[in-house]
Image (cartoon, rainbow, N blue to C red):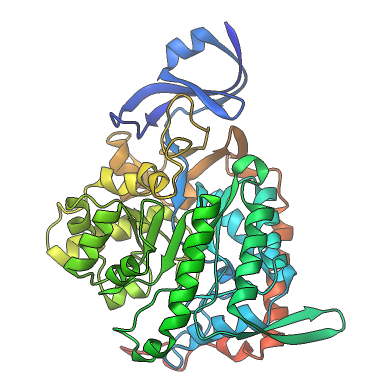
Length: 480
């Protein structure tokens, strides 16, 4: 027998490998950070002498889930302004991210997000450093550093997406210190310099668990005529961002595509096999053709507000050969990092549209948060499936619960009925981060208490505490 670091023993292993094997009474052997064997439990027990064994009986063993689009910062802005004036949450996010946050805010929010992801089996995710219609915290590299510090400590993978804020530039940013604050107008050149610094400092950190991508604001003059006057700024930042991504071999992402904008992105030179484009609602034939021709990936955000205002044509894209994956869109204003919820939402969203319960099979939904997502991030050779040689990013889902019984049809069990609270064990790069729903390397109480403190400080600075009040038409009405 050969010594082994970790044996995940006697579970139902959904491999997501090329043959999409689902193995009953199977085990996964892990040596160091990588998988060294997947196969029948009895054979692996006879071959390996593990230092640690995890009992996977009555559990499904899955690749770690991947969230391809979310926002740093959102965890402390949940539900602000609900039921208030249209656009209240978006305006609040824009103000808060540029004026009312410090390093402590970004570190604390990242620690909260990492804990939520870890407990829900999300081992890898993309986080844009900001939001509020593409307003990024890129006036100084300290905020990105704080985010990455938290994810490093949590042991998860994070792809931090940074890029210039949406034109017009310059934009005013506020920096806080013990003595107060200072304001400065930050132009495109400074934003790009900060992004370059973030790439140099953070990309490849923690043995590759921390990576950086480039985020480019979407140019959408067909939906916002005022942007036409800003076309030179959009062209300049698009060129600069494409060059930054190419120079460092980074992925390139965009937030908020809709009818006509993907074709426009192709004109700006932003598409390619390392591009993944979020929301992508009401796409035109030219949009779909441009994505397909470039090998770009589409990130469907089924629980997002944009998915209410329009539809991402997921089945049509898949049938045209475009890789489509799923993103949570972050944990605000009204959602979270439960990728089981987003899989379920994605399936029923499309089925309701077509009035056809056979649209978007359950296995395809699971692919969209595992192997397909890994392809979108350029990580398919490292994560996304349970195969020999790949990084051991693995989650165990406990099936022995009333809402998941009986113990059959495991792919449908996890895509129809499971939720984040059913994740028993989370492993990243061979390191067990949660077992039996106990996270031992983080002080969960401290994370939660610090999040509350950071939120209260932010609300006091911003003067937006009124946005936490219940809306006037919360009860008894058909519409806010």
